Image (cartoon, rainbow, N blue to C red; front, top):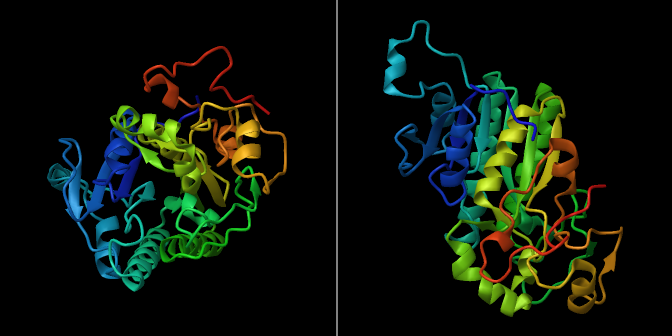
Length: 316
């Protein structure tokens, strides 16, 4: 597996959240130093959390040029700005706050982080977009996808506020990448699954596959999301990019094509798909970044161990 060179200084926003508390330990294991910007502390002895309101541009600019720990006061001269910024902080879905605040907070914080990073000379920025931009997750009523697989060139047309805020973040990233000539990668992150959630939730998902339509029968293991972030830090020179951030396989007991024919009979399939390929396809991160699925769901759900060929996605 390709990986980033060790020892990068990375500012991570939202590291105390569901994804961040697994991604950050992975990044630490790869030799990186992390400063966490959040409103609540991350319970990790190696990571300082700087309480930061990301909707305040002055706080963001100051935080991105901050020391990473109290011990760095001993350094002379002080360290330069970070090598990379990973921006995960956001209202994580609709219905946490009124829609107008969800949009304001998510769009403004993403703008502030990207602008400050670019003006400070940071050359690598990774932002969290979302599976929701594909328009079904938070659709009003039952909606169908345009086509399968869901890939990064899909005509994203969500109707909800959260997903729209994420598309605004992607457009902001594209603008700044072009203006400053930096790498900004937007991760369309699938349904994040923590280790304990396999036993707790997946039996019900498998028993009632219809409940997973809004997530396109796809997911990302929080630990594998750490690998994806590390690979993004290590891969330079791509400018602005969008990557689906998911694991390899569909979360059903039925192979992909057969399942989609039954579940979405009116939705076309635009290319040959792997036997168990996730409908929210990660082909681009496999081919461009070198991602390798480590935490396939079948390893953790009782009675669902991989059989011969099952759970594997053929390389293109």
